[in-house]
Image (tube, rainbow, N blue to C red; front, side):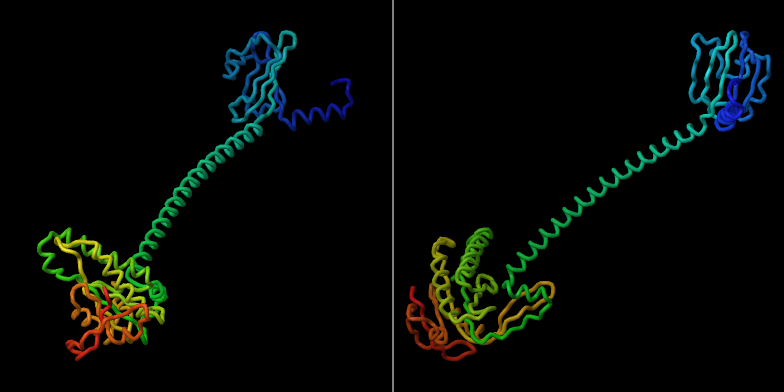
Length: 356
């Protein structure tokens, strides 16, 4: 450096000694400190004693000298002051120069990076756990929604089993159902001798017969566009002409009655053919939904009462219709006239028989 201009030497000195906090030790052949200089205070080396073995004063030098291969570099050495330095050893004749270059900032940066990496790992793990929890929650929600959808469909199906579709929609809209229908046809049909036969067979057989009868009534209701209103014991009540009005309600219900009678004859009950009594009357009625928790769609009026009384008066396998219903039938349905019959609460009534 002595051959360089003073300004250059000054710059080099400031760069190494001030900017990089360089300190040095000169170690003699006896491995004792021969000299020290630079920023020794910066590294906590001020107390090092000249002439004393370096290994006794700096533990990290234990076993390092004599070093067979020089120059030698030790990175990131923790010093007593808490500083971190890169150590460089150079040979100079019989002496060794030990330079200290501050690496504390590099150590701190590395630790910060490690901390950031650790925090990032924690965040990624937390994100993974949250994603798993979110997926689990979404799956549980999907299953819950699927369950709710199934329950909704089940409730819809049950509602449609007890109410006509249009009535069910009005009921779901919180509409009060109370309708006047100027003209419909009402049918009642029951099993002949049901009570006596039921006593002679078990409960399973009795329920099987009822299920067969009511299932046939349901299927034929769909075929002829009628509505099965309810069952009363072994009796079924069916109406045509509501909730939507239709001009052929009497004919539809007459064909329904003929098919129902034919269908049940295929079954036997207590060793005998299953037979019905059927009665039909046409006229005005009131229809509505009653009940709060258990809904029931029902019909009221003299038309309903008279249809029930006509059914009661019928003979086994007979389909009796009122004169009002007969007047609404087309020419394809010929009927046999019956003598006027006294019906309880009504008086004498003209009735007709649909042929077998």
